[in-house]
Amino acid sequence: MNKEQLQGKWTQVKGEAKRRWGKLTDDDLTEVEGNYDKLLGKIQERHGDSREDIKKWMDSLET
View 1: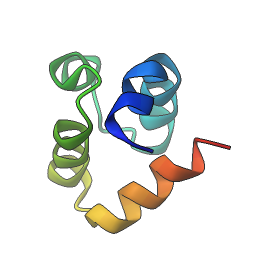
View 2: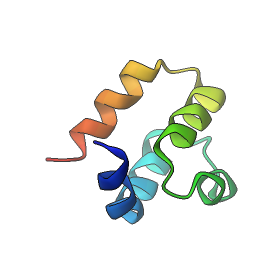
View 3: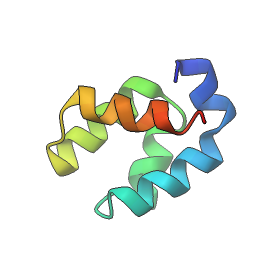
């Protein structure tokens, strides 16, 4: 998923991210508001997952 796709599917991504990474708060998601790099960083910060794992998950949302 690229930056434009993330912005276009932001509502879906927010919901899925909260389900997958329960430590993400509404404030976290408001702060990153569709910014691909910030979302990756916030997930890494809260959960310690690798960027590659997060990117694979985001790519899986395209289907």
